[in-house]
Length: 360
Ligand SMILES: [Zn+2]
Ligand SMILES: [Zn+2]
Image (cartoon, rainbow, N blue to C red; front, side, top):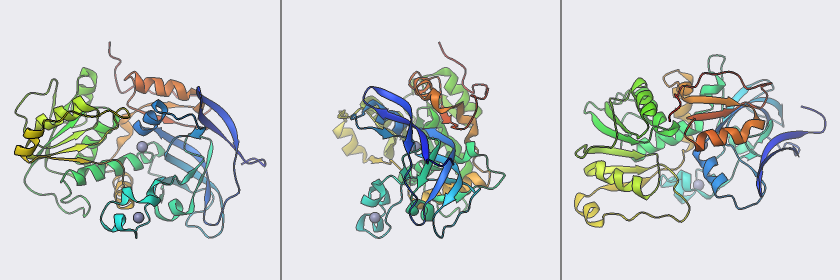
């Protein structure tokens, strides 16, 4: 770290993004300064880019970094490679006690200063204490960077009623369930990989219009891929990773009577869905939303990643330097990328064959 304590960050401001040096504040007790090794671009970042209010901000929250400075007593030391989540619930409020940790007021606070898409970032004490994990040599930062998205998926599975055997890591229930995942983007495919990593008895059907993505889903272990989804799938659970009214209505169509639809994606701000009331009412279907992961799910996500049971690196189609931020965003928007990971300290973008063949 140089003496003047700056980080070079992708700053989102009026008119777009720019790579700028930003001053870094002094560390407070219990905080660590990370040299960012990998930062994942996720749907939430894309949503915030789309709905930016103009205030200068640094996005990015899926971070692996090397500890280069600590303040006071701390679980980590210089040279440690850690992966951290940026949200931590308080654990004691009524929402936390009721199982809605991701709705806790404390959870909303961003524990990365200034963010993930930068060369260096400060990890606040609460994240250091409750949401940071030490990587051993066997765990590739490119896999570890999936900690937060994996935690989100684990919570979605739980909210979808697949929790048996998940949080306890007990043997899975013998009865197979039929799961439909809408969308074979990075989050849809991560649902598939996590369900397989957990060893759940689930038949997994992926509904996805893009043939290249369907082929990839089959390679990654989907039992079936469909488009357009046929009637009569009668899924126990449908995970919608696409978002928007049309996708939600389709998910309701695909779920069985009494089945569950898990809403797992942003839609455009202020959009709504015209829902088939009577069908919902008579079929006793449940629609539940799942938007993040709590400390519990983060811990389990780390177990899955560090044990090697889950290896999501195959979803990384692009590793890019920070000055290619807009290019990475464009690849995602155009559907050419699955997971884009920024590597702030790479001299040049490493050549990496695209896992996803280009589509017309
Ligand atoms: Zn994310
Ligand atoms: Zn709380």
